[in-house]
Length: 254
Image (tube, rainbow, N blue to C red; front, top):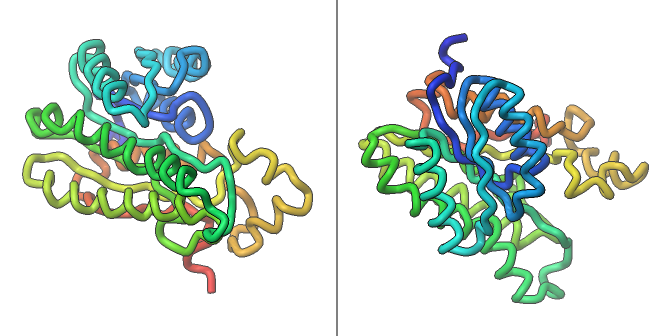
């Protein structure tokens, strides 16, 4: 189990105030890491900071808008200043608050989702590049989606952004491997969070959404935490440029 021990490591997690991001931040702390938790407002980060400190680790709360480059640069600088260094970077911020056919899609909606789900990770990776490459170590985990590896009808901008994030992951993995920095993507399937509560709680829509999932259920946010700890740890020391799909078998179902 020492392979999964993150004692002495530090992490930076975006979209950390709820759902998958909160579960990942808590799991990293349980494994021994100090964690900088990032979201749009400090108030939303109070609970996850409590999760981190309850595990006996240090929590650094950093309010930041990850769709704004200057805000990201400031957040990265604050995390490095507070923690001394950063070993693990998790780009988890993202999502989609609408579903619409492509013909009816407003271009402003397209641009908003690309910026949230892809450009935000570009900002974070770019801001951390000198730090990680200079240290000669690190693990970057980009949280993509099954929508990025398969079709995403009614979620076209979200799927396109996540596919772009997977491509970014592979390119950075190749560029940075020689410097000791690993970059991987984690693709959750349908996961029950506050953002999609109206869908998974619906007695008809909830089961219908996961009807093509062989495990026949929604994932829990906590089920994405173990893969994140694995990718962050020495257990994955020879793993880079990979796309880890955690979807209950959805993408391999006939």
